[in-house]
Length: 347
Image 1 (cartoon, rainbow, N blue to C red):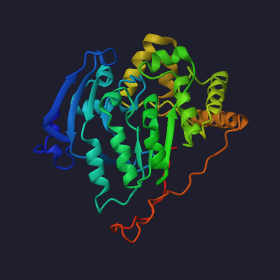
Image 2: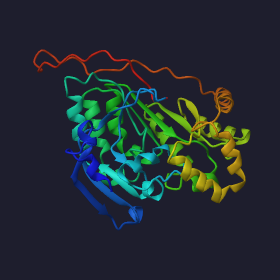
Image 3: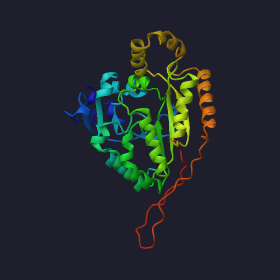
Image 4: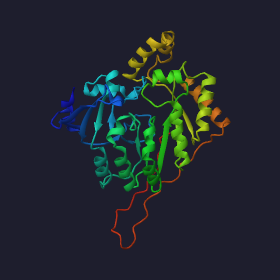
């Protein structure tokens, strides 16, 4: 593996070293939930990442405590990132998990820096921070606690039910800052789910997460992603999915059509050839211009989903202003005044 390129003394790493080459501990666990999975524990050098300006993402900063994901979604756009370490982007991405074991302490140090201005931080935007590994490493409680203590606005996108473990932490954080939670449910078709997202909880279990969060006063939207052309996009399927999302109490639904970036495209197309060979040529035509489906197709799906959402009583949401920790009393130590920030939302 190309760990050495990330060492502090390498030419490539001088600008943004991730961790020292000798700081990698590789572990395997002989338990049913982790059988066949290898964990590479590292002590990262940084944890808050700036999103490239050319990105389509509506946020500027992210935190990703893991690389690789046991959800094993065949379409995952993050697969390409494994190649940066000479790790396989196919089965390797699903089973070789990099764990930044010092993520909570790094984040706390970053948030305390005078240079940090309290911008929104998005999590779960690369790989899921509540994948199965989180059940063992428990990095998110420390991360959420650090964000709470600094009243720093944040959002989480997940397919994992493990987020409910941290319900109390999320409730406390929402009392002092803006917290946005979104659960990803692209479709409710069980046969499709078992083949395209084999390591994730079932769609109805994810919608139970939405139901539980909203029941405890934490607004939760659904990212209806991905809508998979010719497999989950017919009107009956869209209706069934939106109906289930509305019944869960979700505050909003945002559709996102499948996109196929390099790394993910090859893995997905190989899966398509095995499971739906009659669709290969249709995909080659639909994605002939690049990673994204044509605008006309995206607009059609978005229009259909929005119309269904309105029919089922799911109106637009309006993010509130970030709440901040109250100013200290006269006997409390003085704190640096928090700058005014604009709340960004994940959706």
